[in-house]
Length: 256
Image (cartoon, rainbow, N blue to C red; front, side, top):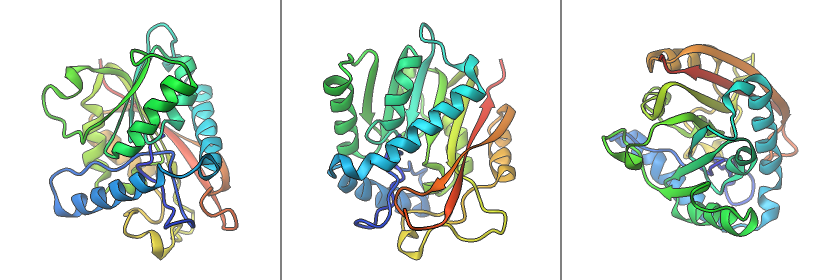
């Protein structure tokens, strides 16, 4: 996952699974994107111990996706876009089950670490797993015009100024019949704030995300077959002494 969404505040928060938010031309979105880019550039320099909890969460998220929608993962066919890929924790879990992964993130430091993971630790060629530093805008010709069977975005939506804009952006990179998979923190039933004030400059969606809100975004982007499923409940890796939070996985499918 990208570190689009780590919240460490220099040690007390962090979601390096996911990358950094991509702004869409609005000052509000640009502010969050810039803050996340700076944060994740710094976070990506941390040692492996800083990523242990998030790596475990990445495994649980991908396991939940594969258990819920096994038909989406084909080692011989499936080409994946890992949006806000961070240092590669989600891609590392996905790559044994798909043909190819392209990661994108706005943090250059995270992308460098992602590519080192792919080539040096996993022994993969760039044709199988590679990330690029780019802020996607949904313009013609981005990513060489490639469309994907699967777009994944994990632990990043709560960092995004506009869930609707980002969902439309990601849907534009899907092939007809392709699926968008999102994993993130589910809003608590009582509506309480899940992120402390120290994270507010990085996280616009401080209460998590509800099923209804995500369904609205998916349907607004023209995606059907919406499915929302609880994936895991555990303390957030950046706050091991805090309350447990529920993580969800969700799917939407682009019409044929």
